[in-house]
Length: 583
Ligand code: ATP
Ligand code: MG
Image (cartoon, rainbow, N blue to C red):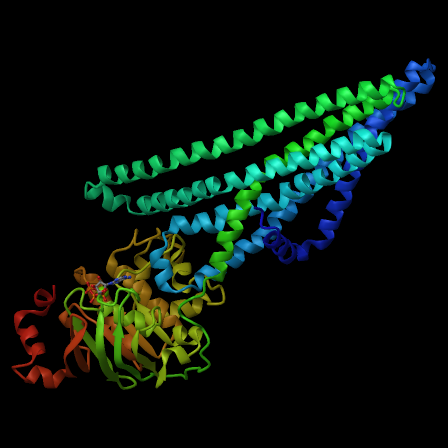
């Protein structure tokens, strides 16, 4: 059935800012309905006067009146449509913004589990369905409802017998159509769900074109595409069948009502209750009543779409981030202590057996630098994500400045703890916007100052248009090393107390490597740091070393001490050649 309460709630909260315009719309709409109802009355008088043999001079004003009313009616209709469309889009744009904001604050687990295409379909597709609901639905359902009532009242005034018959018939029509509507709702829902899946799939594929083509996975992807299409087709056929069922039912009922009008009209004319003009009027009103019924029926399809959309939008809004932002602690200036206290973590809450970190404990005093080593997949990047609280550990705690991360205000934590990830995400924007994250309050002077301090001015000079050079999204346009340089600058601008540097594992060209070395030196000044290192040169900066294997710490200690101890894992690593041993 139609979730009237949900619609009403939506209406109330999103139409409030547009109250005045909504009232104007209501006024314009009522006038159009009034005009529409008035015109047949003119024709009735025209017919009766003509039959009575009135002179043309008495008929012409009626004809002119009819034309003026018909013309104004059309004009007002255009205005009403414009208003409704405007209200609909303004209201739903607000909803779009709210949804986007909400989604951006959801936890990383949600984002990893939802494809970008699916999100687009949710935020844009569903909300567009709602905007149609707000605009055309107001006009068609509400406007036509009033028109229908008007017709019934006027017919009733003409002859209560016809009025009663039409009212009963209309009630039956609606009842039948709503029944049918209830049957077809699930069909529509299935179509929308598959459509979301489809767009999610396409979004993912477009994103991965390079890898798909390079790995020859095109055939496989096409077959998956095919699979979704195959599921979609019968659903769409069923959906349209539902539509056709509604349509034929409504047409059949229309003809029945016309027949009824004919029979009753001719009978009442025969017994002398109605004039021929009144018979025309009744007949015309019956015909007019069909359009509202038909429009409302057609809108039912949109209404079910909007219903499904409201459900999904509601679900999304109700989804709370697993990372609650209710910490009160504000971290101070300067380098901060960082502690892992028996941290146990797995990405999937349910599948407990895939534990990525097992009771990991270590402590970094303020200003010290820890080199974190370990084979690929041992859980290094995972630790970095826990420090910035992109995920919450299932056991133990990560403490920054002595406070568990969940006690610290999320925004404050992320301002004071910075992470440079292995593959830096670039945006399709200028170098400046990529550095400042589109924050206009950061001046070019400040930017240049940081770039100079990181000794990156030469690199900047090598870019064709300096700060205005446009970058491609993803990692296109820059090498992994260059992208990391850019990320360093981002971090430096925020001046955090803890830095987690997840080094790119790819090999760098000597020139970029030199730049990175210098930049890292500056980055670490007066900051606590975890260096997730793949290269010897980076490790050499660490005061302490932590070696991770399969999510467990197998060795930790001062770097100098470990180097001196021939039996240590670290010393063996150095002898075996770290780059090779950790690969
Ligand atoms: P590398 O040296 O290659 O960067 P790493 O030490 O950083 O490796 P992690 O990325 O922390 O390794 O991954 C540790 C484990 O967690 C791996 O087994 C990986 O498959 C798993 N993992 C990583 N990210 C996710 C994720 N988003 N969802 C589920 N499992 C993940
Ligand atoms: Mg990693």
